[in-house]
Structures are given as structure tokens and as C-alpha cells.
Picture 1 (cartoon, rainbow, N blue to C red):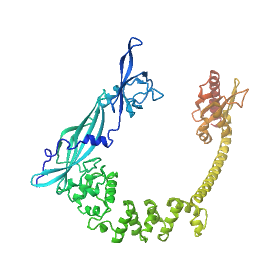
Picture 2: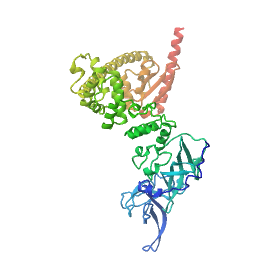
Picture 3: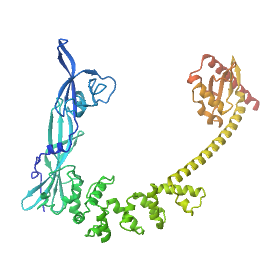
Picture 4: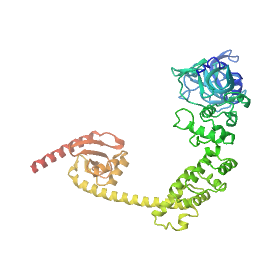
Length: 557
């Protein structure tokens, strides 16, 4: 059968007042206070003064306010160099602030007319309403059509509000499939270009969406249509829609899904469809609902339950999570008594159940569940406690050790003991490192003693200890203490320049390259550069060092 072209058959305008319906549902709650600079007549000054004209988009009320310079950087988009004085707020109001309209007392966002250039000159709010209708087709059954309209509220700089209605998406339910029509063509220049007519293409991505707002909703619409047996009235229970199109696509592929809805399992189907479509792995297409065995026709068998289990599920109104949890426990071989055991499972997270089944003996499953419920704790807390108790050498066959009366307190006690043990080990490790580094510092001081020098009221000597290095950085306010490891390991050499009359008071700190006999850096208080006096001393010292090194090499030769 040749595919029917629905482009001209689907109504080009809504059948019902979708704008009023969207307003009733609170889709256009956002209000704006649009303001601009304007000169008004002042009788006291016998002339005009610069003021601010403010208009509320919600009620249309217009008033004048005192103009206040904005100044500084705020959250406005484009030029908003001024604001206006609001008696209801302690500070001036500028672009982007929230305030109350003095007439209708509705909270509104303030917008400067200059900022509206970013919106194309108008403030735009969109809402989507799905309209259910039946489409007569000659010689065939009436089609159920879900027509999604984009309702656009446009507010201009004068605060005038107008509404536009655009065809957005339409879904036609046929005898064997669902046909999709679009009201827009493609994205051009960063904007979605809407068209005033429907477009039906042969190639569309099979993405089945959800209807947010449904109007009108009447079961009689289904009678005599292609979706008469879909049980859509059992699936859709509220005016606010769920994944209606996804359900209809699933029903067309798996007609037996209506059996689940007839038996009161609509909440399960809705949950599974929504979960599958909202997952990050959903790439379009008809929902699979892997929890359902589609080879079966009877609801109990479709869900993998016996008649008694299915009856218990309906009476207790299990959720999709309850069903998953029950089947997980039952299929693991652990006996489940209904309905009392199900009440226990509902109090435990699905993750805890699966972990307990994997890591604990099956015989202790129900005892573990009751214990965790009583303790108001999770399985990982109990496991962590037992691991710490085992490492501490406790007797795990002791009932009180394995099941402490207060799990939280016992767990925290072991955590504190473990932390104290780690702190002690870290302290001992640190003390050992300090002792080893002290030895290295002492050896390094002896090794660098030949670099000591005194002239012109200044002296230079190698660093003697790590504490001395830290004190040097603390008093001179620089980062020489970070060179401690490099100095101790011989990767660099740190020397202190002192005044001869105050040999213990930090003055300048010098880093020396022993291999190339060059000064890497020489810094004083707050990383200041050398003074002429220090520079001359450094030059004399460096000549002395190089001379000693050369003479030493001659003697060795």
C-alpha cells in the first residue's frame, strides 16, 4: 500500500484554543519590567527632566521612575548604563534584577530595551501543547493524530504581548506504524526556522518523544480510530503528558502491551519507557522494555511471575523497582515470603540487595536486611566495619563482633583507630625523613664549607640545617624553604649572606650552581634584587670561588 501524504490533510491551525490552555497551565508565568530612558515634564523646574519609563508585560501598567546611574559590571547583556529607583527594593534596579510590579504585584525580571537586541528586538517565551484529534481518511479507519503546536509569546519594547502558533510535530497512528510530520525544516544560522505548513519526509530519524500538555483529553476520541485498542486512556492518567508517542510506537510493535495496562500495570510500563528514553544510551527507535517477555501474552508470564506472585504484586501495587528487586532476590535462590518479605525489600535500596546477594552468604540474607533496616545503615558500612575488625584481629565468629549493637558507633570507632594508626605511621615516617635529611644537611654543610667568605662587612656561608632554611624563608618572605630537598640531595646549593655585625640575622639568600660556578639567583626581603653593596660582595666572592677551584684542579693535576 502506498504511503498516504498527510501534509494537506492535517489541520494547519489548532482546533482548540491552545493559547488559553497553555496560559491556564502556567506556561507563561514569566513577567518582564521593560524600561527605557525618557524625558518628562517637571512643573517645579518648568522644563523636562531625564526619567525612566517602565512597563509591566503582565498587566500593561506603565509608570515613571527616578533614573539612577548603574556603573560597574553587572549581569546585563548590552548597554544598560542606568537603572531606576524602586521603592520596594533598597538598591537601584537594573537590567537582570527581579522586582515586583507596583500594580499587579507580580514578580518580574527587569529588562533594558538595549538588551532586547540580543533577542531580535523581542522577548520570546515558547510552550508546546499537544492536541489529540481524529483524522478521517476516505476508505480507511480514522487516524488518531497527536499534533504538537509551538506557542510563542512575543513581547516588544513597548510591552505589548502577541502570540504566534507554529506547527511543530505531528504523529499519525496508522494500522501498522506511526508517521511523523514536522513543522520546521532545518537549522539555519543558529535559529530554527518554522514554517506555516506541515512537511512529511521519507527519511526521518525514528525518535519517539513525549507530549507535555494534552488537550483535549477524551476517551471517546479513540473510538473508531486506528488507536482504539491501544488502551491509551489507561496509559495517560493526567492532563500533563508522558511519553505518549513512545507508548503508541511500542503498542504498534508489541500489541500485547495493552494486556499489561488492562491488568493495572500501566505504572510499570510508564516507568520503563521513561527510564529507557531518559538514559544516556537511548539513540532513538521504539522502546524495548527488556523487563518484559514479549514471547508471552498473559501479563503474569510477561513479567516473569506466577499467578500468585502477580496477584500479590497487584494488591501491594508494586513499583518497577519493587518488581526488579523481588525478581533479583527470587532468582538468586533466596526464598521470599509474600507479602511480609516484600515490605522489608522496599526499605532497602536495589544496589544494597544486589551487593548482599553477591558478597554475603545466602543464608544470612534476610538477617542482614533486617539488621541494616534496624541500624538505618547501608551494606557498604557493614562490610567496611567487618574488614576493619578482621584486620584488627577480632574474632569474626563472635556474634557481637559480626553484628554489633550499634553499627555506626562501632564503624566510627574503627575508623578513628585506623586514622590514629595512620597518623602515627605518618608521624614516624616524617620524623625518619627529617632525621635523614638532617644528616644530609650536616654533610652538605661540611661539603660546602670551602664556599665561605668574608669581606667588606659581609659574609657568606652554606645553610647548616633545614630549620635554618625554613626560618630564612619565613623572615625574608620568600620560598627558599621549598629548596630543602634539592639542597640536601646536592642538586643545588643554598648559601646565606649576612652582615658581619649580625651573623644570625637573615639578609640575602643565594642559590649557587656548583658545576658551572655561577649564581642562579640572589634575593633579599620579599624577593628584592641585590643592593650595590651585595652585588659587589657577590662579585668578589665569585672570583675567589673560581680561583680556589682552579688552583685546586692544578694541585690535583
